[in-house]
Image 1 (cartoon, rainbow, N blue to C red):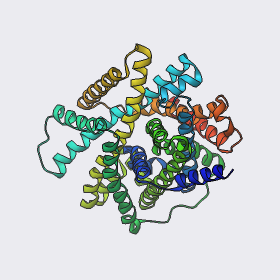
Image 2: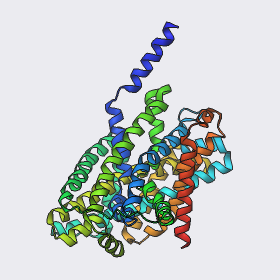
Image 3: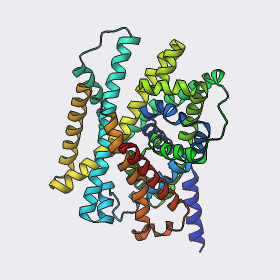
Image 4: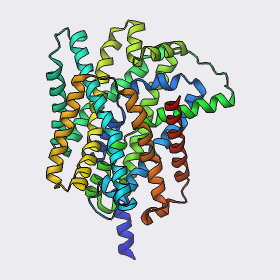
Length: 417
């Protein structure tokens, strides 16, 4: 009995202790979530008015934390110690369904990688021409060099990748905080008139996908969960929950302060104008205020945000494509891994050179699939997988399922209209 109590106490201490390893993963998940979408989030969510924004603020933390916790639990529910996402879905849903879900998972991440390759090339090209007053190098060389450098970071191993996230995320968080505080003198009192119930609910419904995907770091969760299993063993579930909880908290505080500051500093007419021009909130602020400070920070924020999010999404794309190649073509893990790197590098590079406008296609396809994989599938697994059955009675299960269904229905509604 004494030994059991001592073991329980030791486990509790291990879980409660926060380590450098945990900090690195908090930063990597934060960086994965804070992509270029954050620069458009104030416009997309602010147009709905003040009260829907307040409700989204209240829902943002439980939506973000509970959904990612559910996906991490799902990955950790496998009987295989080194199972990745493709292994887990095949184990729980059968070979055919598992491979289909794995393919959809890859296809939901892959277009985001493509758009980040385009966005990163455009951001650096614009900075070289407009801020640095340089002649931009040929696009084929610029895009190839940028994509190669990012993939090289990923191939450098887990430690190098996590350090790269730390180097990027600290200045990103600092700049976001600084800009949020810098805009305070420009704040104005918003309209506090309560909208009609039907209009309010309709606005909130359509805003849910915007919030879900602005805070999503689902692409990195499978790799994250596996690393915690290797690092913490039997305590992986609890440590994953702890890291995800703090990640969601930090993410919500920084991003929502930025969103509130931008929305209160701009009128609804200004937000609508920015949406019509299809530019980020920082670009719009730089244009209307003629502020060189914001004009300089805008490209820097975009570069750091896109780069950090690219690395996080590359984790998920590499893992899922490697699994698909192994299972569908019988390749060895080593060969599949090398082929995956080559395929991703070439395709991202080609698309970055071509510079297409695929943002709408990305949102239309990636959005519903990510919502199903992040919210709906792990909750279905709670009722199907014996090791997850203990979570059936938790209030978080129907909440996450409901948010997932609302997000998918809102995305399909927007697509059809």
